[in-house]
Every structure is written in structure tokens, then in C-alpha cells.
Image 1 (tube, one colour):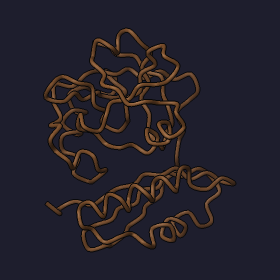
Image 2: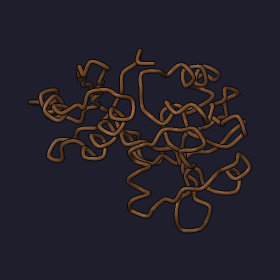
Image 3: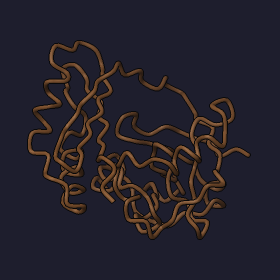
Image 4: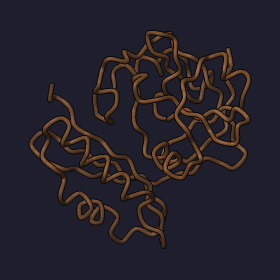
Length: 208
């Protein structure tokens, strides 16, 4: 299956540049190798052109297709207000842990769109997906992190059927997070966070 593109979504800030650029480019290159796409050797240059002359924060989206074509779009980035707590609900839609494409960030987003559509934006700020065994995997656009009181955030293993998020990778490398399976019951006994590289960690509450 090659009827999709790889995606990287990055935040760009004046005076700082692209946040976690190295990790994003490393994931893109790794993903391309795994599925036989050409390596995006000029991805950094393309990103630089997209933000040239910008003076305010941007959300940039880079895609790489099977022919090695790169496209980058940029739009204003509006940060999540301080003190925000997301409402999170669990979707009936399930992820298949044997689907290895779930481990890559691609334009094949049907399962996530289906899950998101189960609730209105008033009912849920983010929607949580489980796998066929009922294990917590990820949100439609975020990784899951649980503060279980151990001093280190817990995040589900890739083998459950989920994306290797860039923020997730950074926190694991910094030993601020560790890999461990999470049940829905666990989410009611600890403090839940949803997060991605674009927005960082966002406190959340499981409802419904």
C-alpha cells in the first residue's frame, strides 16, 4: 500500500526556529526507509523556505509521497491557553495492533477521523482510541501520558498499535516518560495528559 504520504507537523517560533526539528526529520527518514519511500534529503530546506520572512508562530505541515515529492504548507499557530484542561472520551472505534502503518504518521487517517466523528467538539476536546484488547493506545492527534504517582509519566508501548510520537520520543529519551501498558481503569486512578510536538502536554480528564 503506497496510496498515502508521510506527514510531519512542526511548530515554528520566531527566534527559536522549528521545535524538535531533529526528531521530526529523524522520524521522517526512518519511516521512509521502512516503507520504501525515497529519503527526504531536502526536507529541512523546504521547511526553511516555507517560513521565510515569518514573524509569528506557525504550524507547518510537511508531506512526503512515494515518489519523493515534498510539499510544505504553513498557517498561523494559536497556542493552547494556559490552564486548559481537555475533556477526553473513549471511542467505540478500535485500532488493530497488528497494523504496522499505525506506527507511522501518514495521510491514511480514516480510523482517526471515524473516532473523532463519534463526538462533537462540545462533547470532547480529544477522543481516545483503544486496541482490540481494550488497551489504551492514543488520541486522534495526540499521544497518551499518565502520571501514576511514580514520578515518571507512563505511555503505551508501540506494540499496542500506535504512533511513535515525537513528543513521546523526547520525553522517553529524557527519562521523563517510560513505556507501560495502560487500561481505561488506570486513567481514573492517575492524572491524564494528552500531548504532541505541536502543542506539548495538555492536562486532560476522562469523561463519560
